[in-house]
Length: 81
Image 1 (cartoon, rainbow, N blue to C red):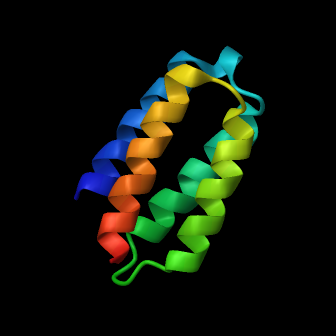
Image 2 (image 1 turned 45 degrees about the vertical axis):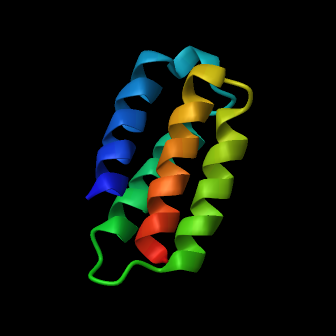
């Protein structure tokens, strides 16, 4: 699943660039929620969208991570459509 792969990549990048994000705890929490939702037989699109927004805010202006987050968002949108 592309979304799960993108999430794994983002999680690894978060740990490598933890000092660049606005709130690493909020980022980790968002990643865990998205992971949990993606493992569901039918992921909740609303919950995923809300959690992606929370993740975006938590990332702040960490450009090295925002492109990965964008790839994750695209993969999730493809999954839900």
